[in-house]
Length: 146
Image (cartoon, rainbow, N blue to C red; front, side):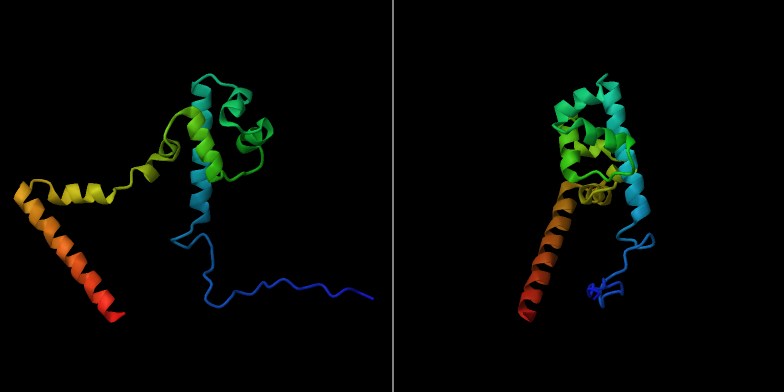
C-alpha cells in the first residue's frame, strides 16, 4: 500500500507578490552582483593587510572552511552576521564593503542641503517651520479620521 504524500503547493497564493528579476523592489540579479562585489571588497581588504585566510578566520571568529567557501566555493550569500564580523575584524564600516553606487545614494539630509543651498538662515527656518506645521496638520487629520 502506497503512502499518501502531501503535495507541495506550487500555485501562486492570492495576494502574494511574485519575486523575480523584474521586480523593482527585489531584484535577484542586483542582489547577486552586490553580494559578489562585497565579497571581492572583503577579500581585497584581507590581501591589502597581508593576512592569510587562516589569520582572518581567527580575527573574524569564523571557521576557516566557512571563510574558504565564502570566497572560493559555490555561490554563497553573505549573512548580516558575517558582514558585521568581517567589518569588525577589518575595523572598517560595513558601508565601505558595498559598491560605491549603493553607498553614495543621496540622503534626505543631502537633499535638504541641496534644496536650501544659498538660502539665508531666516529662509531655512521659515521652510523648516512650514514643514513642521504641515506634518503636524497631516497627523492631526489622520488621527481625526480614526
